[in-house]
Length: 247
Image (cartoon, rainbow, N blue to C red):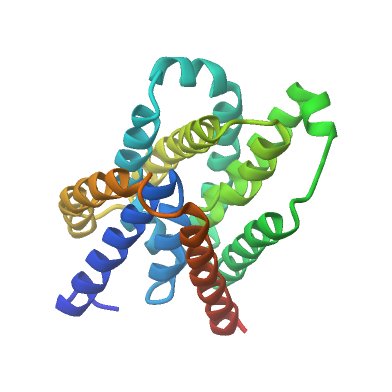
């Protein structure tokens, strides 16, 4: 799709809604924004458009939960593994971007919904913390590099590690922050960013900030169970449409 007025309106709407959701529940921006944008463009382009806004969102989310540097100290091993995996996934995406990655994105969303529905248990994660940190950080990074969605893998790790809501928000956002930094570096080296794309990305930061501010304000006012059900339905519809597009 050309960068015309219609695209800018759709892009702005996607950015605002995704940021609002992220502010309200602590995660969700890439999981919602990426597949929506992937419906009107390819996977690589969708990831490029929201790379810079994602950095701001991750930083706000981690800082808002408090004890920023303690969170970094607690979860940097997981984030570093995510960064390594993201570097590999991004390299694959750069050199072999295909519609198959839309299907992989859809499967990642279905995995997240499946985990939430059936509350899968993997007790070895808590018993072997170092191994699970390496395995889940690395796998989440690769999938994040390819599809921009780490949440499905990281939520399994967080739930089985008995993390609090605050810890889940900080660990997932820190992993995505580290992964996004290396992804932006690699995209820059490869010359994937152009002036027009950067202008639109930076212009969206004000919209992101406003939506995050509103989302954080309503975070404790909306019944979380009702809110989460609506989000899950939306994600299911998006993932189903991506599968339909791919096949």
